[in-house]
Length: 253
Image (cartoon, rainbow, N blue to C red; front, side):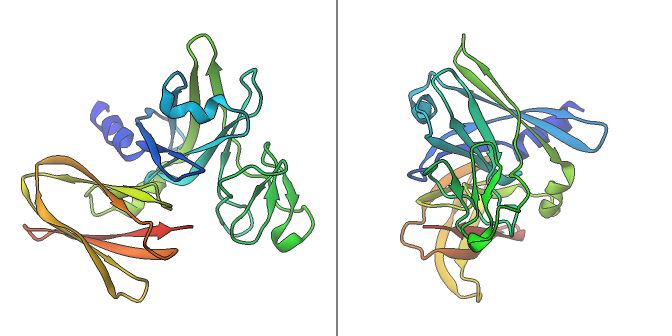
């Protein structure tokens, strides 16, 4: 089972992103526990003594934890100086829109239809200003180890989320949605040429992202999306030995 856990840990590895700037702050590899009910528990540990996580030392400043195995980002925010936090799913319970990257006037606001939720995930205003009748945002448990200044985030996720990668080839980008930059990650079983092309929703080629030799194992490279209009894109990855796969990239402003 160790090799299976290693795969799941790799798949559910996330990145911590500054909600304000969209910049990638760091990578977090979860500890994986497989449950009898066909779910996994992914535990992420953020060392708040590191300067890159300074946002979490400030009340009401946000970071997001996101990645290909994380079907929607985790919103993480300190609520008070004593070490009370909130960890919420950023997917609106109306139609799945994403929460705003600020906590303003005591609420998160959905970027799709303007529903509002408080720091506990409770709906305060429905979509397009309707009554507060939406289910709450999913709230995840955490442990704050004040002695060591570490924040432990726990998330239970259905194993079915990996079905979208049923070609058996790890290809992903994160954060996704992206604001300023995204990191492409893929694995190769040998050194070979890799080409990645970006297409718009109509299938028109927008840009060649990569066309170079990569090495066996896991490869990473960053791509700046600031000049791309907001929207959903498709990117294809082709290897010189004939493998082809496609994934989606969403850009938000």
